[in-house]
Length: 567
Image 1: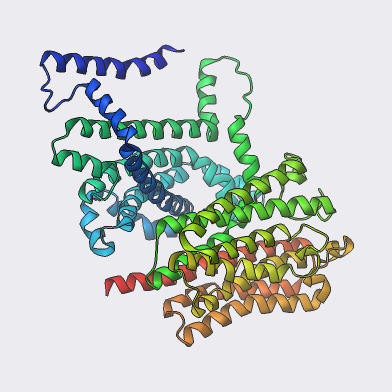
Image 2: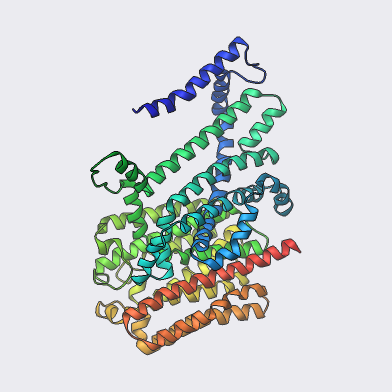
């Protein structure tokens, strides 16, 4: 063990020994500074009666939910501000102005808006972490050498490609620094909030001990907070070592005259390979309907952030399992080959074996199902029915002799399960109801996600037919399939307008009309070509249209909710 590691272990022990000695000789008043031996004895008692574990779990849950709800949008906004001068001009003044405000000072305002329950505590963490992570992300993207963007652009990279292949990797050190600071800040803020709003958690435990002058319990809780902070910092350090290995490599290069090439860290390679295998770019098709269902519930007066987070994670896992299962069975049946025109998949590149992909699908379905069972316990058997049907639909989409994707039912299954079923399921988790207006508002999302699949099938029409894969595109024929694409894309806008007109949605729900020109352009491009490579670009753009349409629709309902709170 290196000298630095020995010092890391010995220094806190020396401090505790000095503290104990000073307290025993009377140099420290034990009424205010309990001896470490007494504090650790109290820790044992609190562990045995379950008080410490219960309160620690409450604090960790609040930190985790608030941290995730803040970090993901903060990174997205930070990257957008980093690559877009227009977004930077719009958002940077607001972010820079709000960031210095002491977040604890905002607790009274949060309580006025959200009450004193769990949503208020999550909101304080979100407000505390969001701006810190966003600013670090912007700085990281802005510090990426512009030549890398030029190289990517000259090689035909789209703006989306430049974000994924240049901006994010280049800004990753700064992003991880912001995330690390944000995680520590989240713990600090939530303990302070629990002191002000004592409803369980380590902060409430400290407050209760203070009221009866129980000094050993106060110190015991503070030690647990310190250990949690140390653990979080250590975990982030390990994560950074895996995701940003070139920092360690740089140190080695400075120390060695002729350094040997470094292998990719095992954990980093594992994460990279499986991340690629699950096709994360497609997760928008799950994130949008689940988020829309939760926002519709919030619009109707029901929202639980914890249940929303679980629903989101469970849905993405089922989606990932479906992608892996599709790849496995398409490969097994010969529908996908190394020459297939589509996303770079782990099987096509040979980085995973078919057996590994099959097991990965089972793991994703299994973990997603466990989350689903928890939601069933919380919200009832209706969620169980939807969950079982969703898993079966995902599995048999390409599995079995009569797989849905091989008998012309692909678009119908995708429309139902990645549109209405996801939106209704997410809404039901929040409100334990499935009213008609939610079913109707899910239809535009269903139309567009079916349009993504149909664009894929239009691209692969002749190839699928040659491999005996029957899709609606090759059943209808080339020309009729173009009209189906028009119905799916145009239907999403028509249905949304009709729902607003008849009063099922607020006027702000029409925000997706901003991307109507994009929809019109895609339909024109689909009618103008039969060439697979050009249709591949239509496919990718259709996925973007689905994302923009969905998030703008969600933003419209969020705006309506905010308008209610303000007025």
